Image 1 (cartoon, rainbow, N blue to C red):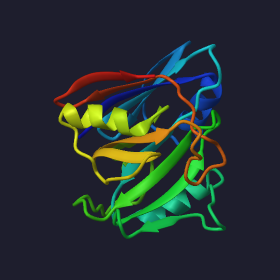
Image 2 (cartoon, rainbow, N blue to C red):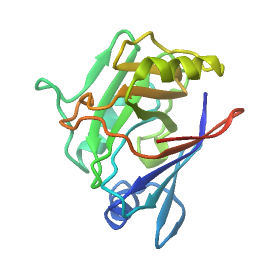
Image 3 (tube, one colour):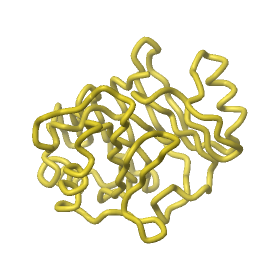
Length: 210
């Protein structure tokens, strides 16, 4: 499952423009007074300005599976890393992946993830051009199982079984991370809230969640 476009809301558009353009130096596809579109490898990530609340999300970027150390050093030079139980990275044997987490000025919880099962090793030095795609988008629901059953009924595979509060749906190229409202986000102090999300999935089409 591959995300062609991901569109999220923000109340901090000016701060996000500075962070992604000037700090991370992510390539800009388009921008205007009320939006910013970024190129994250094969995905276009768009932030649209809103006056309704202060939206924040969890999303992840795939990185070359052999460049985790470089990626961690790269992001640590630009912003603070999030921690969990005193650790500032994960090594998941279940997912065969290394991850590092951080936040942008809008409070979005970002993850750089090196998935070692993917054949995407790179021999170039790590920079913003090494971000391969948006590979995870958090979808928050009052009840997780019924929504996951709906996705499975539409042909989406579960990536892992999960439980009542967390189920990843899709594959290593694209996952909808379905979590229960008020569940604490991993590697963050925030609890999950429901905000609008729009994704364009290859061979599926546009889906909107709220």
